[in-house]
Image 1 (cartoon, rainbow, N blue to C red):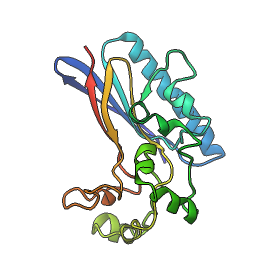
Image 2 (cartoon, one colour):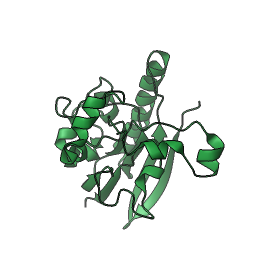
Image 3 (cartoon, one colour):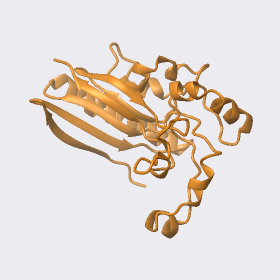
Length: 210
């Protein structure tokens, strides 16, 4: 599958903002090597944009990188000082980048998932976003909007954070959350967060610093 970096240039309150979106390769072995190369390429381009200082930068998407993995520091650029980008969710929920408190839990770990959902505040603080079962019925799911996996998501749970909103200098974060079935609006008509993807959405309220 071809992986791309797409962007849109916006003007917000007179300020130029570039919003990047991407979906990095998933998996180990050759896929992990490809993902590492993708991270470096994305960081190189964004570093040039930040150095120019002509616009504020936001990068978001499914990075297939967990906070407790070795790729996370390279993704956010914390291998440099100061970091290239800030993890918007972790800026509001510092525990989300704390592996002992927010470990990746296998979707087959029934006890681990039960413990996770026994404490909804922990789930919200960790920002788990990935782990839903996928539906292989393309016609029924993607065309007819009827997915068998939707019916399973009351029992299954996201168990790792691999979706991010990353912000550059001059961008602040006021709030960030990952809607989950612990929320009152989880299945509200019009919201129905569980229908969006096999991942949960990351919702962030950003601001432009003067």
